[in-house]
Image (cartoon, rainbow, N blue to C red; front, top):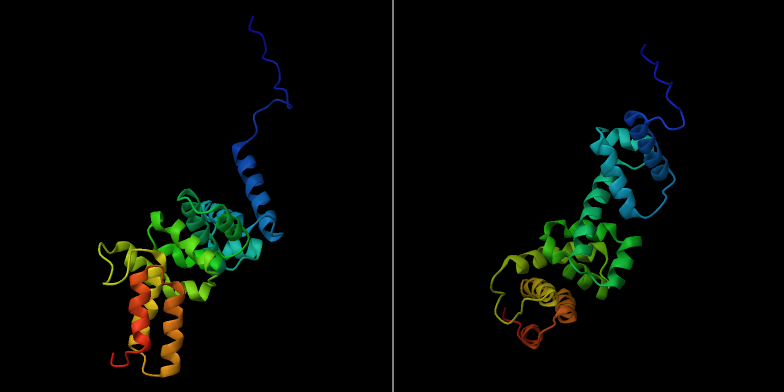
Length: 206
C-alpha cells in the first residue's frame, strides 16, 4: 500500500518566483515614488525596472521620473561606480553620492580609468555641471593623447588650462580674452603651462 504524501506545510513552501519578483519590482517603484535613498540608488533602480521590460514611459508613469531624467541617472550611476572603483578620494565620493549627477553624466565620454581623476579634479576646483561640460572634451583629448601640446603636461589641470588657452588665443575682445586667460591660469598645474598662458597677457599678435 502506497502512503499518501503529507500536504505541504504552507509556512515552509517555496515561494513563487514570479510573485517574489513582482514584489521586488513593486518595492522599487515605491522607493522611487518616495525618493528614498540617494540619486545613485535611483539610477540603479530605474535601470532595474527597464531591464524587466518596462519602457522609460512606463517607469515614468509608475515613479514620476521622466525618461530623460532616468537616462541621466542611469548613466551617471554607472559613471559613479567606475569612478569609485577607480580610486576617487573619499571626500569627492561622499560629495557625489548626494549631488552632482549632472556633472558625472558629462564624464560618460571619458574612459573608465580616467573618471576618478576627473571627478577629483572637478570636486577640488568646485566645478559645476556647466563648467564640467565645458572642459570634459579637453580632458578626454588629453587622456587619449600620447603627447600633450608643447608646454602642457598630461594632468587634468593642464588639460583644462589648454582648453581655455586655445579659446583665449582665438578671442579678439580684450575683456573676454582676459577672462579666458584667468580661467586658464586658474587650472594650470605645471610651471611650463603657467608660463605659456602668461605670455598671452603681453602677446596680442596671436
